[in-house]
Length: 127
Image 1 (tube, one colour):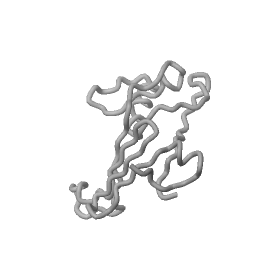
Image 2: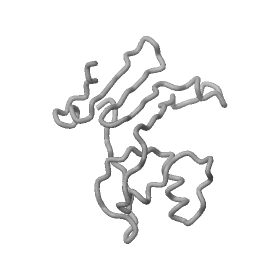
Image 3: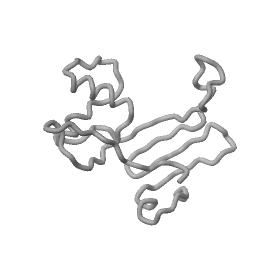
Image 4: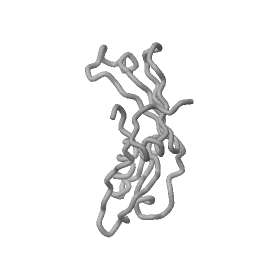
């Protein structure tokens, strides 16, 4: 499969979190606020990301409707200039994933997760 559509994330803390499947949209910036909260350390206001512990303890869902990210070239072209090496930008919301290539000649890709999950196709959804 060209793009990963896994909704997997492992979070276990015996006696503190509930085993289960959660459909909340999370991203790696959520890890530090979660770990700081677990360690009883105050999360700085300016820090991006959300504490995942309440969700993992079964106390509701995250108030997030989308996550965003970028995929970079492995080796930096110029130190301190990360924008030069962005290959794709992506967005996930609900069942949809949008992938925007930095190359204007490349195709924009839009994926419908339930369709991919049920029939195993990896082709972008037609819009």
